[in-house]
Length: 246
Image (tube, rainbow, N blue to C red; front, side, top):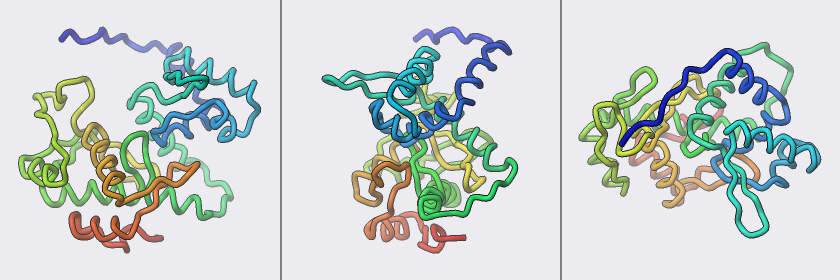
């Protein structure tokens, strides 16, 4: 398979994308889509706190720039982030913003829920996400590196026992398509890495399907169920204290 051409980004191109993301309304729209679910214009209007006409204009600009993908279903249009790379860029910007000048913002229940466990596009983040990455690394199931990760043979056996069958990766860490099999993403709230790539997505899917976590409506946060508390402790050695308040 021939890889698509890679273009060198110009300063003007970088500035254009930065300006698009830098608008507060558009930043809110992109942040709302970090949960990994496709949302309608009406839902994104609610998240952004602006009217429908204003939202429509912003969605058009983001779509034209290739930051959003649009899917039609009946009368509705659903918007989602165009690729995992955009989610990674947003998570990196969130990490930078979290280390910026401190502003008075008393933490509330929503903040705590996001820090405990949340979705970062199609993988787990927060304390749960970083704890999973740390557990798999400590037990020799994955080897975490600077920007990447490698799944070991023991890791494939362990993950296979959870019903996660991973394709063989080539020497570049790819697995039959352009998306890496396993990579790391810097967590903005924990300042440590959580797992992304196809493995990160598979762990999120497994956790949802087995009822270990449940999505919280209108939020990127996910709730850890009683079954999940037991499973994460038994299978990964993650005790509830690791996921509690700091």
